[in-house]
Amino acid sequence: MILVDSTIVSVATPTLMDAFGAGVNEVLWVTSAYLLAYAVPLLVTGRLGDRVGPKRVYLVGLTVFTLASLWCGLSGELGLGITGLVAARAVQGLGASMMTPQTMAVITRTFPAERRGQAMALWGATAGVATLVGPLAGGLLVDTLGWEWIFFVNVPVGIVGLVLAARLVPRLETRVHRFDLLGVGLSAAGLFCAVFALQEGQTFGWGQVWGPVSVPGLLVAGAVLLVAFVWWQARNPGEPLVPLSLFADRNFSLANGAIMAMGLTVTALFFPFYIWAQSVRELTPTTAALLMAPSSVMSFLLAPVAGHLTDRVHPRLLVGSGTTLLALSIWLLTRAMTPDAPLWQAVVAAVLMGVANPLIWGPLSTTATRNLPMDRAGAGSGVYNTTRQLGAVLGSAAIAVLMQARIDARLGPDGVAASEGLENPGASLPAAVAEGLSQAMSEALLLPAAVILVGAVLSLFFERPRHLVRR
Image 1 (spheres, rainbow, N blue to C red):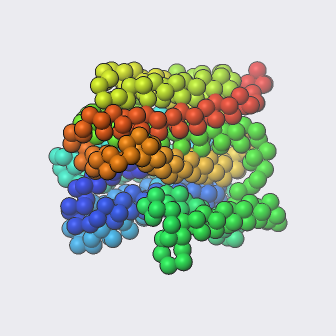
Image 2 (spheres, helix red, strand yellow):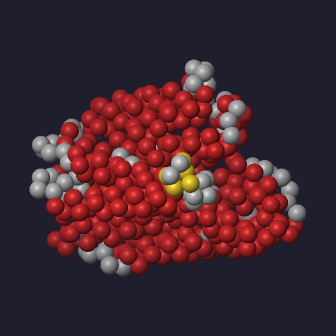
Image 3 (tube, one colour):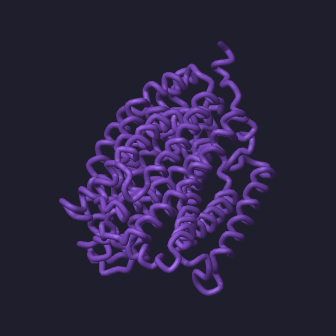
């Protein structure tokens, strides 16, 4: 639900504009508010799970998420306008931030090191499935039942999840932790400034936001606050929010760098692809999403195999081969993104992505947490998920700038026609514009292909996990 709700609203943007009589920038905040409220508190909610128990925090987060989903769906009937929907989405994002670190922490603390890979592989496979389910479910629900149901659908799932988690997830031992209030304040303020600036920079033209507040100013403020946060974590005489000793584990540090690269890659990958599929090839959102369906199907089918290998094979081999294969599949996708190439070429690239994904998501999360002490599982999960989300925000910002730059370079004055095509998917483009737009979008895809190779390089330096050393 968390990952699907990161993308499901984008399909409903025109419908929401009509339903609320709002502009595109107002509707974009329906997604932005969710992502901000999701990303910023992750460090805090991860540590909170260590203090009061991951099951408790997870159940509270799932309750908040489910009730906020109901609020989102009812916002039109309640007459709250687009502002009410944005507020409900922010609360929904807060619930999501409470849940995510606990899922990793529960797996880390429940499964012994030699069996954890299979559990983490299934956990990681959900990311691949969500990339398909979000756009597909959004399109189908909006077309059939109405925009409200992209939120209402979470309610029965949330209720079932609450019952199952309450009955089946064990209550894990907690330890008394002192809460680092200064660390909470510095991390929250720093992450908010940085994430907001990167996420919304394109919207504000990388200039003024409001009064003296500017995007560059927010970036500088975020960097200063985060440096101050790290300084305080190193010198905190009590118990820091993020114990820097976590990074003494080489695999944890490298896995965080690799998951940031993966978060950037996956986010940056789909924007150019869906623009090409809908604007150049004139496919519907649902049909465009179906081109990527083999990726999600293969990811889910191969997750148990990848999990089995994760517990028995050096992570360097799995993550290294997975990231290299993902880079190759993205490059193949760029070759398929022309106005007249057979669509099966894009499907072949999607199949290869589906083979690559389970070799990355599960093994990376397992490698990051495999050697962590149990009382640091929540803190480690919070850091890991924060890095992944920061990578996604960076990917969104970077690909938006790069796409516009390549459109300007390839089309020049015809860029206006291209922009009109982006706003009206399915509208026929002149042949020259379609060719230029295809080239621009395929060139933009070289960014995620290059970034994921950074993850491949980082994976070369993984140490052999301790449970394999014992063998």
